[in-house]
Image (cartoon, rainbow, N blue to C red; front, side):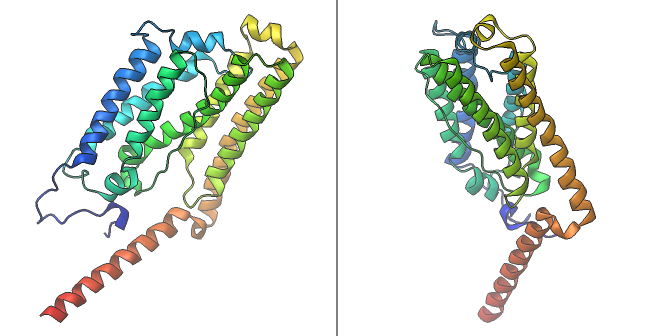
Length: 296
């Protein structure tokens, strides 16, 4: 079976590729992320308030229940698998690691660590990012899923950070409500975009956004006194229903897409991409054989 070009490996007759600086930097970035983000943001090692304490201080109308943040355990587990897996001979030189992930992992970790420091010192600024994912299906869990789930959560967290900024600036309740509603609309738009308007639908990001929105609804069932004092009961209920409606709507969208792909396999973007990748691989092989014949 031909492998897509994005996942190409040296042939078994060639010696395994050596570790390079990108492999080492990915490992260092993961360790720094665990030590600094967890140590400062969650454990308060340098004596600053934890992220949880600051989240309560700057409670917003779209702050999810604290249980939502348990997703970090999943993120760290799969990023640990990536950090270790990309050191192995089988994966260290694949294009997904060297060209796809490249330096992006290090950059994201650097920004996340910086956000943890600034949040701990209560310099609340919106942080914005990313995750671009590409590669073969069989590499999904090791090389793609860790970044897709992280990207989905950072997207939700970025929307929350905008609301935190508004609260920290002591804006009136109508401004807070407007920003909260816009945030829900943006998250819904992103979920639709990653499912419909990119070459390969990203189910993971959409599911993570649904997770975050569901926990926003859960939190608003029994909000903190700060929220009760700022917004009326009808407003709180309205935002809660909006959040759960968006969260519940994302899953049927995914089911609809999957059913359409079953009915119309030709619409499957993964299949189309694989055909293109294999065609490129075969063309490259033909050119290589032709060059060898010319030399002979």
